[in-house]
Length: 150
Image (cartoon, rainbow, N blue to C red; front, side):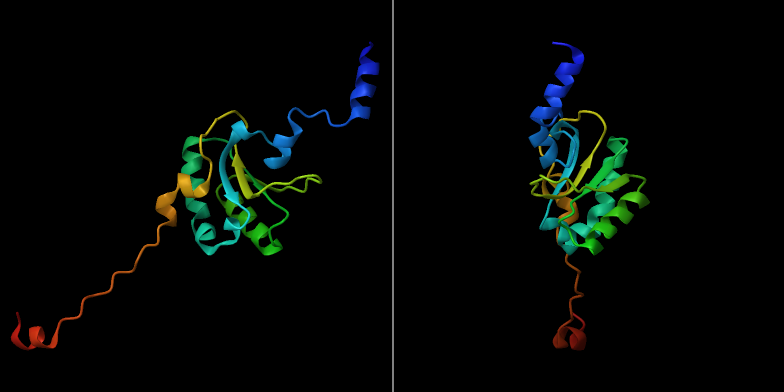
């Protein structure tokens, strides 16, 4: 079979991407390159949005270059928010609009080489950023303590 025949046959039978289902799930990249994932619902929460810049900063100390892929299923405001945060941290940001994509993720951060991170979930990688930090309330002195000074 000649090279031209092979090429025509490939085009006629469908996609020529390597592992297209995986690439659809991870917005056009491979699982081995992904360093952080944020689920679609979580990406819309205030807690994740407040700490996203810190997470990118920590990741950029270990991995370079970083790319942020944003789901088209997020609201336009949310997409713009994440795009600005990524660009502020020097990361490339793209809103992915893949037609047959069925991804549970709202945000994916990846590199250009294989990193093979075991768990890429935001909550697993940065539990300290998501902890609710209670504001300390000053203890009121009791009436008798004020009165007697004990």
